[in-house]
Image (tube, rainbow, N blue to C red; front, top):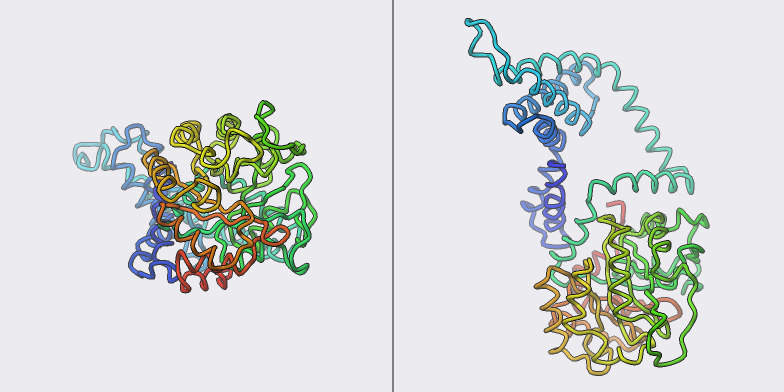
Length: 464
């Protein structure tokens, strides 16, 4: 895990230096330096990990072994590229040889080369033999990998399924932390657009999620999504296990899902709606959301659902135990959700936020100033500060149908949210039927980050 630990920081540097953010080439180059030398980094890190005492001699042997393997194999076939695998093999061999020979005794006339000094020597000899073998064995394997990759790209729905399966295999490396770090580094310039896939899309040729992404959304949040009866109208696949991955492929955006911690003991403000089990935040639905490949889960409540803060706390604990570090957990209420004693300014408090964070929430959500009676800029700012002090991010939400208001109103809410300290800006799905007014997504984005970042976000291909 030692080499993997440096990847989030490198990814963050690479992202910060891009033209659509800070546009500072040397920062991007610093991040790229890590990714360009992953084979060497893995050779060193794996060697240290496999050695008994983590001695630097093992690291040196791993690096030398990597050089010998890659250069030796390339001398046989100049197009060979073993990438990280070559580094891992070199590190494993170096670590094992260190354990075997770090205390070896040689004849007096060779005594200088004994002990730990012998490890890089024997490693280079072993890797020389492996370079000869891989120089002839690896090229057909490499060609096969390339052929499979090209086949997946052109295989339509089947290719998407295979891609999704392979993508899920990457989760154990823990790179989902990059998402949280990237949001934190954006300094309040992340737009989260909520959409409903079950409704007919605004324009039949595309999904509402694609439309929201095209107007500047950075993250996509599926509302009214039944994880056991998956529907995304407008999508070019009806395979349940491919829908989320296909959305991510088409939009290039992280995709999350709302699940609702309904509290049967909630004090009702109004008649409540009955929810299907696939929309409720239960252990079974959370497990299914994990299998479907969502990048984050949002534990919140739609109107008339009876979701309480106590229910959210329990759901956070369940979500964290099931999802582990595989996905971000967002939690909180945008409005009363039909609960009498959690309405207006009583929806959220400093105490409630701390409970959410202690239960395991990565992101706390609460109404944006001006969206719920009594939720003022001053009150929100104080609660946001508490959340930040406890290490959580904050998403301020427009979940009260104001996503269908005029652009001037959207801009006021957006700037108030940024002044309050929002890390993420949410815009709901009730502007039209299942999506905010698209121009309001763009107006919100321009208000918090300007035309430059908005236009680049709108037009940039996920293939770049």
